[in-house]
Length: 203
Image (cartoon, rainbow, N blue to C red; front, side):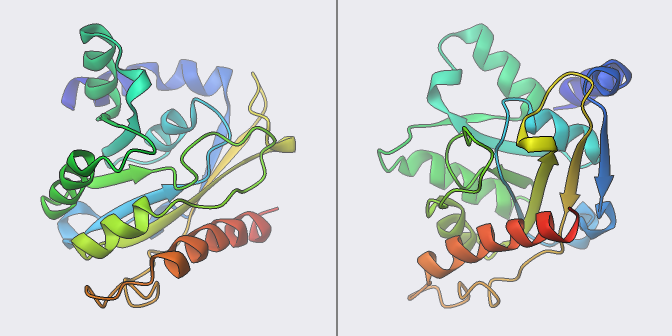
């Protein structure tokens, strides 16, 4: 991903001028050297949310993305190089994408997931699907909650957006520490609740 990180670095001033943003809680992001297995979970209000998150902090993020974004080799090269993205077949129990996600987390990479599975049309928080909780349970990862906020939850040119990083949530906190009986429903709900709390704390 070195080329993608270099490209984002070069374009950062231009991106910031077009979509100004501020970052809150960056100190809550563990360093890769800490050895903490990590899944970053964010709400999803715009198509450029991944860019905000990548520009707002230094660690590379490997995103699980809908397969429709990979219609050809050029698109696959772009999304995999710049965003570290790989496809998932939504709604089809894509075990290959799950296995790849678990392996990335085991390898010390930070996985990025939008738990709602799709962009919110009105900016409100939706229900989380179980994918993030399932991967966290299988990999022993902590969840790093992230909130993306802006006026009326509509990202627009020249309107400031705030990216808030919360403290990592442990498998025990999410009731995912029992590999045989992980409480995926509770964990999924709690992840979204925590994102909502971050928004309230910074509103």
